[in-house]
Each structure stands twice: as C-alpha cells, then as structure tokens.
Length: 247
Image 1 (cartoon, helix red, strand yellow):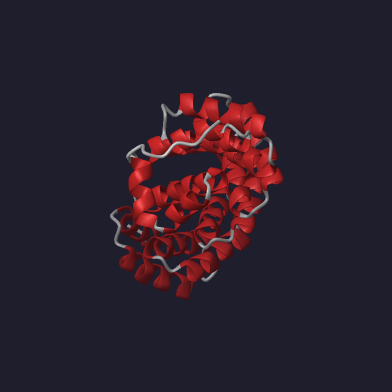
Image 2 (cartoon, helix red, strand yellow):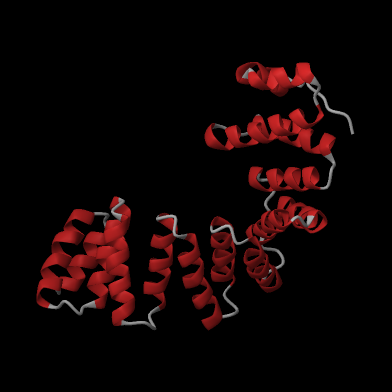
C-alpha cells in the first residue's frame, strides 16, 4: 500500500488529523504532489481552517490547472470564506469549459448573488434554466436575482416555477412572497410571510419577520408603527393572524 492510499483511506474515514500528518510527510518529500495538496485542502476545509485550505487548493490548481476537481474544490473554499466574487469566477470558468453542466452554471449564479452582482446572476441563472427548465434551484436563483434587479414579473414567474418544482419549499415560497411585495401585491405578500413564520426557525424566521415588519410599517399609522418597535408583541400578534393590511 502506498502513502497515497493511506492518505485516501484516512480521508474517507474522516480522520482529518491523519490526513494532515500524512500529507505533511508526502509534501516534505514531494512538494509538487498536486493530489497531496488536494487532500490536505479538503481536510483543512473540513476542520474549518479556510485560509490554509485555500492556499493548498491554489497549489493544486497551479500544479495541474486542467484538473476539474481542484478548481471545484477551490471554488467551494472561496465560497466558504465569503469570497463570492472569486468563487463565481471559478465556477464560471468550469461552466465555460463544459457548457452543458448545469450545476456549475447554477453555482456561478448563486455566488453572483452573494457577491451583490444581480445582473450577472440573472445571466447565469437564465443559462442554468435553459439547460434544465425543471431544475427548481435554478428557477429559485433566477427569481431571487430578478427580484434584486427590480423585475417583479420575471421574479414572480420564476418563483412560481420554483415553488412547484421544489414542492413548496420554504425558500421558494419566500421568493414568491418577495416577488408579490415587489409587484405591490402587499396583502398577498403579508399573508405569505405569515404562513412562512410557522414553518421556519432561527435566522430564517428572523429574516421573514423583518420583512413582515417592514411591510407592515409601510401601511400602518402611528399606533401600528409603535407596535413594530415592541418586537415580541408584534411577532405575537402577527403570527396569530391579528394583523391585516389592505390591498
């Protein structure tokens, strides 16, 4: 059994400390071993050591620029670091090399959203939808990107498709509510947000509650705006269905 076999087996059983120890040994003898850099980057990513993981992924790409696995790994690490623009560039490069690969085109679209590049996200998401019209994630990302550009009608159509294809997933329903709000269908959007808060928790619920408060504030008089300031009370009366806004 070779040292490479030991490294692979350690990685497959989730022994990341062993991967680091074995790749240290391998790279001390063969610093140009691109596969060792790859495994080390994967182990470091799993352990949350992102800057060092990026460095080894970059080394693997430098040593073998044509290996798809290395560029995919680098894009994942960049995304985890919050470097969404750089991650989108890597996914875009992969997608251009294989235009039929929906997952890379979709990943580029999602990273463009994270990088606050909604127009570029729309372009990538449209390509993903053209490749696979029944891909619910692609329709969802297209809706989110179109909403960021202010295209209410397009966002509504894509969100409707995503909701059907993703079997009513909360993310898709939220995108549909956002599109309704953008198209001034405030009553329907408010009710959609109310429905969502019963199915969400944590940060997702807090995000939807924030939207509901903003929408309520647009329609409420002075007493209603005061209610928004008392967060727990607003949350209670909103979730119980005691608040309504006009059309």
